[in-house]
Amino acid sequence: MSLENWKQWETQVKEAAIRECVSYMQRTATHWKSAGRGEYVCAIRPERTPSCRVYDDGHWYDFGIGQGGDLISFVRWRDSSTYNEALNTLAVDLGIGAYGKAESGDVGGNTLAHMDPDAAIEAFKRGEDERSVFETMTKLTALCAEMILHPKDPIRTYLRDHYGFTDAFITREKMGYVPISLWKIAMDAHPELTPNMLMQSGFFVPRRGDFFEPGLAEHLQYPIAAAAGRILLPYLRDGMVCYTIARKLPMHERDERSGLAKVDDWDRGKYKKHLTWSEDKHSYVARCISNEQLLYEDCGRLLRSDLRLYICEGWTDAAILRMLARIVMSPVTTNLSTKQIERALTYAKRAGQVVIVLDNEVNARGDNPGDKGAIKMARMFWEAGIRAKIMTLPRPEGVNKIDMNEFVTRLIASEGEPLVRSA
Image (tube, rainbow, N blue to C red; front, side, top):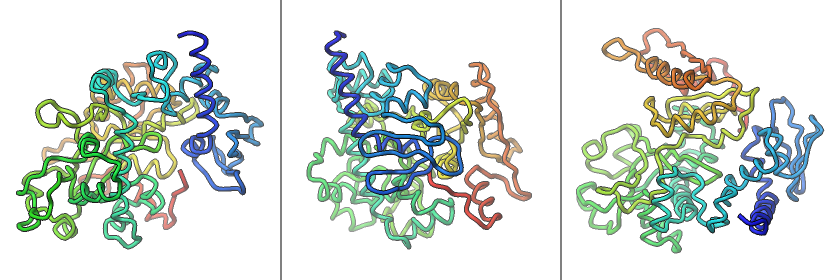
């Protein structure tokens, strides 16, 4: 890359850093509140009283440590990195593309920043625009979130009462409900979304009348949401949705809200993963949607040698810890793929301590699959030189299973006072 091109790339990163300083610092902070005109108070390090101020002009200053500057200087402080390393980090985080990718025309366009390398190559061949795909997914997720906006909505109430999530956290994480008619709702709300964009999003499958109650199919002339009738739980990267899983409704809600006649026949699992590309079944789905990522990968930016990283099993387990401002990631499974292992190790090397906490469960054979999964996972970390520890959750007498979400909600209930602080 020529010096002239490098300067153009550097200028683009700096301009984006000024524009995005407030939102970037907000994503990093564990405490955040408005302090007046164009000023915000946040916490970017462990402390009881936030002492860092962020300004709309693209600067910050932490009075507790006597340091400040622009967003580049913040990344250098946070990551203990050089100037060029901080520029690369920001370029990827802000959707511009790391130094080197810009040389091939990747500046400000199709960055493919969050993709696996193999998927990125295939997506490039197909002319996919990662940002456009994720923006479409984010718009669809927002429509699902609108389905449960009312404070007394049964699903919002379920998320509060069963999982212990606060209303603010439910809204921030864009949790929602997937209606059968999401396609029609999306076309009405966002006329800029073409049928091709909607199908590429992985939210939809071609229409099949036998999914619906008799008579209902006659009025639905569009593809249906693959997760129709479920609670939507998204993965967020830089504020955009890049993947989702969806949970079955509680039994007392299922018949009333879903309208699906054969939910248990065509869609048996408790959780349904987002559709990803496959040559035989889902060739219309964008290749940039990957199930190889980790939930809350954005947390990796917060890690330092004095901080702890939790590795959890499920979406709700990781979410309850994130709500409590803990640094957490989750593969949403106990069987990590090779790429997930590589991702986890990359982040874990930056942490001061890694704690693996999976479900404490005894099955019908008397085995504890959570323990086996935790030991297997810990061995991967130890082989990479990372001394990960395993946390075993105390299982109440007479209970066959307890996970992190249940443990924390029980703890909150026993204390009588929420442990929640903004994250």
